[in-house]
Length: 278
Image 1 (tube, rainbow, N blue to C red):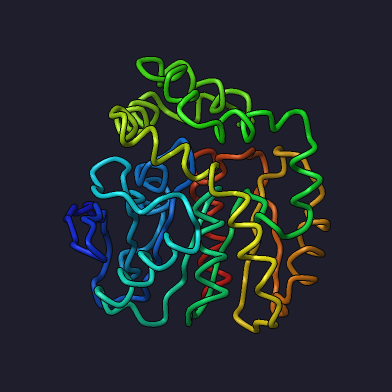
Image 2: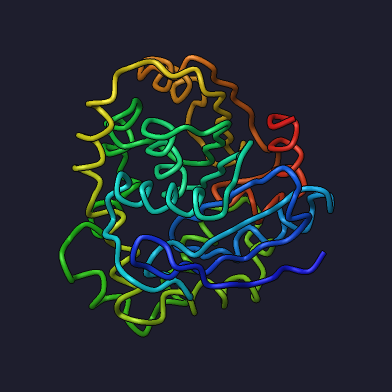
């Protein structure tokens, strides 16, 4: 089914919402990471059957979504929760990739969510967070947190800078198509969008404090997905979630995929999400 677009006023912001499928079907809400836009979910949405309701958004300040919400995952989770209520989404499976997965975790710990899928990310304050921070290959966490500097360095060079991450972090860079890359670059063309993206990193210390304070157990079903080519020990992530109180956890890997699994293997990602949700 075709993907329809709308702009939905939520919490003083305007969110760009891309939707396909049956409006009365089981809903799935997709949250992108950096440097991505709603467009990263297009292949997954097209792989789903017409009976599902698929919704992807541009995060606040990114792409066609306007208004600033800051980079705090707790504050962004409040925006997502307001959208869920505005759209009347019941029986929801919330799916987040990269920073979107961090937002999904914040939603999991603060609001009623039926199911949560977290993809290809580490959660601030949740093991193995400190190990990831010490990893020299994750150098961009530090750079992106510096005030103003990454905007100065990347402005006008979004395509070249983003392509480094697409090429290095995917098993087969060609699977992230020129159309998808161009859409993501366009989503961060403005200075405000660049800042919205880098603010996701600047909020990590506060995110870690917020998450560390949430120690009550949760029985909400959670699926943690990771591309098998991304590296890292998925069992360490599972142990961290369980230590943080996630009691109903399933883990799975996507074969022949790296960090951008939803673009590298969209059909396999959809199959894993659908099997978990149903």
